[in-house]
Length: 206
Image (cartoon, rainbow, N blue to C red; front, side, top):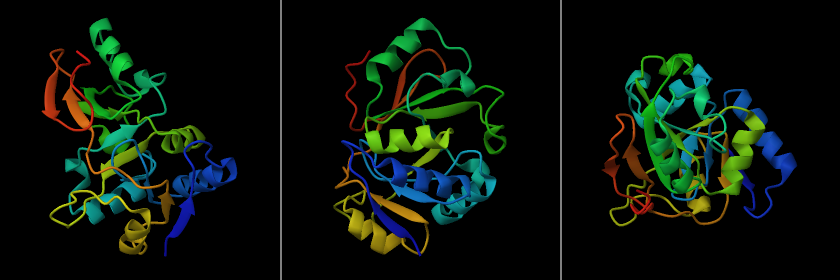
């Protein structure tokens, strides 16, 4: 059964952040707040945890198009091929923020993502999830949790999220009410920006 952990974005408790980081290192699954909707995630290097998320989402792991949540752009070259200055300026303008950018992946992608030609990168404007990935030392997977309600596409109430997910994950982080508008997804992998999904992020970054 999952544990519900309250964290405050203004000052995420370092001991609790460390505790969650240890759960992630051991292959645990967490639900966490972002600057858009709540996400389901794990350490991107843990195959067993990734397989669990794929089962929960009802897809094959090799078909999954999940993004990586990073604390900033400093380690972009760990996963992304060299990008031109125009692309980098777009990233700098938009991040941290409610965007997912699809970029050309390099040969250093974790083994479960090796066959992917591109990788989605998220740097949310949310101090809780940034503290978590900094503590972990690796990005975490980003995949949104959906609500079956016809009105709210995404679940926003952490206590209701906990009730629904407590038998599927290890930790649900209560970071306050989440949004119900997903990130804007922009493909920058070919050089010419292509908007894949309009979401919370505005398009005036170009």
